[in-house]
Length: 174
Image (cartoon, rainbow, N blue to C red; front, top):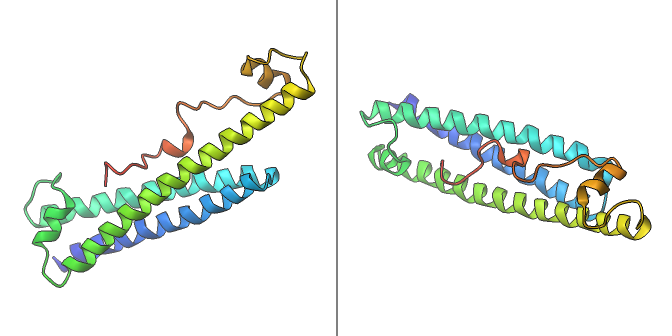
């Protein structure tokens, strides 16, 4: 049983580390947006996407370890982590509980930071659109952002499915 507990602890620690690394990347990205460092923005977005993949792998490993621990305790695979914690040996309960709570808190911070970055990028794009409208008022319809994007060859971003959220970063699945 100790091996399964240690596997769960290791998976929780790795997930925590991945969230911390994501916060660093998001902070750096936010600084690039705020200081209009366009040259670094693409690279930073790529780093964030890579970190999203690392988080997804860490979450999958944690979920696998949680299921294995549930099986070792002869519980259903979908049992909440709190139930598993309550059945662990007393010396492990505080550590595992603290790791779960820290992961939830960092996940909430990551989501908040993602939303902030998304807002800053949208605001930056709006400012650029305003600039384009003022500099080239006759080149395209001011109310048609698609024609503006085509006129200056700006790729269309599908805001309904941002890549950063495709990896399943949500609190429900924790």
